[in-house]
Image 1: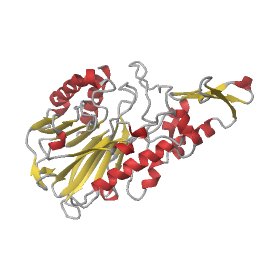
Image 2: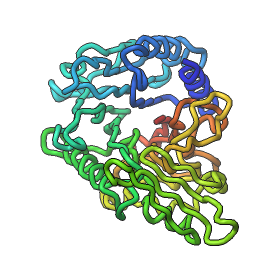
Image 3: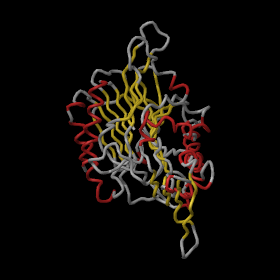
Image 4: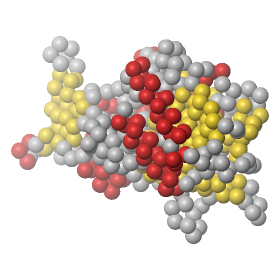
Amino acid sequence: MSSIFWLSSVFSQTVQTHRPLFVALHCQEVGGKNYEASMTHVDSFIKELLSSDAMKDFSRARVYLDKNYKSQEQFTALGCCYFIHESLKNIQQFDFKAKKFRKVFGKEVCSDALLSAATLEKEKFPQDYFPESKWSRKGFIRTRWALADCAFDLVNIHLFHDASNLVAWEKSPSVYSGTRQKALGFVLDRITDQRFERLPYFIFGDFNFRLDSKQVIESLCSTASVQTVRSADTNEVDKLIFRESDNDRKVVLQLEKKLFNYINQDVFRENNGTLLLEFDRELSVFKERLHELDISFPPSYPYSEDSSQGKQYMNTRCPAWCDRILMSASAKDLLVKPENEEKSITYDNIGPNVCMGDHKPVYLYFRLSTGAGKPHANKHKCCVVQ
């Protein structure tokens, strides 16, 4: 519950700092890990956001929450919140059933029948995409917007995680990387197919992208030897222990299915961990279809869930940039380039010193150009948050 409070607080601070006119907030794992018991907190969070001082001038809102956990074949636990400032006059949302844009009035919260909602597309990945064909809360939601004469898609996405550090270490790239690649390709094909006009798109969420585990460990433990510990019952690998060859055989890294205990966490924080970006390679497969601004923030996962340890990583997974804001080439062209004004485009994390759960939210603040090429083109301030 404290994480929800801090997320609401730092989200409001970000809005007050940048003063955008259009805000898109994408959430995954709505309700948290214990969603059956915690789903009521989500309603409180949304109510608090809508009534907060930071959002008081946002006269229109659309909130979509996938809360139907009783339907495992459809449940994605995705949440999409869109806030529109009262000064923003010419904005419309697309009706996917009528295949036309409609003006946006008032504030609406939809959580009961997302599959029948006309203003979004929601899909869970096909069951054979899931590891071992076991259902989990992974999929995507697309909405479509028109700001003056500029139309674009916003896509909320949640891809598959690494189930085992030991399996991820076995080869480069890992088997999990391939599963995410297949699922992301599925989403990109769906949002660019022939059913609707192809538009610029922003796709942001928890991609679960990981560093190339085998190569990053070989780099971090380049002078270490490896000890393998096997289960007495199955002879399967239970643990890998990396020790310095000298220096009293000091343990550098212990690796288990859900343990990544490295001797020096500072390597992931110093200079925002950018020395490790060379091992962040999963996006390279989509370099012709997806673009991203330069990353200048530390890995977004896995942060400690201890409220007093806002900057500390848990020793469960190798820290990685799981949470991203990506876009098509045509969407990137819509971003107004900085001229005299500093920080007219910002890609950063939110609440660097505050605990908000195991993921640190990231955001992109930019000015969107409408009426491009016209002498009095408008520039609208937008903020998308993941």
